Length: 252
Image 1 (cartoon, rainbow, N blue to C red):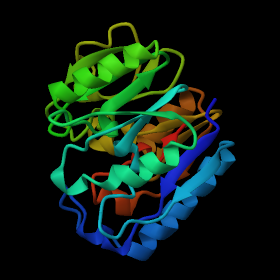
Image 2 (cartoon, rainbow, N blue to C red):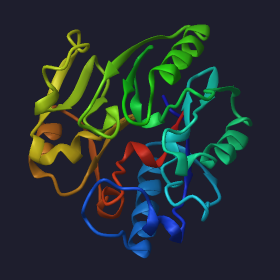
Image 3 (cartoon, rainbow, N blue to C red):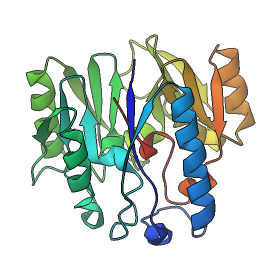
């Protein structure tokens, strides 16, 4: 059971954030409102909010998940894969030091938290444009030090591993249709999401609830039929920056 969620409100500079999408610039006030609703949902899930200040010098810094991997015994601070994001992790590390022993991914290793998917005691590490083999190998050694297993998964068409695959408990993965045959997940049950609603695959299981992006009716029906208690959240402004529900917090 998670107890805390570390979050950071967006800065106005978010309108200049990194994106591969062509959905236009985010509206700052709308993004703030959506972040507030997200935090309310985290509280409904039973989490205490740990908020750190906005970082105007880092337009993408609202996406705190990429800066750390938090386990029961440690917080592993990443070395972000995109050069413009390096430095976001410093204030996150400062706050996490109040809760956990810190470990670090070090250059030339690069690693984004969005590429790390935990399934019980096992961690899947996506090799992407943001997470390289050196960073993955460093993470594997650190996880093993604290009693966890891990494996690498090569990805190519997604920004991060969790863009299209997420663990939702009970040996079950949510995956977009085009990834169902991906190797490495044979031991898991799968809930498939149509590719045209691929954004909905970045759902977030927190204690008794599944947080899902609003506006994806087929995915919503699938989640409800699978027995989840869902909380729908509007994510339009974060979608414009390639960000999803998991990106906006660190749960621990």
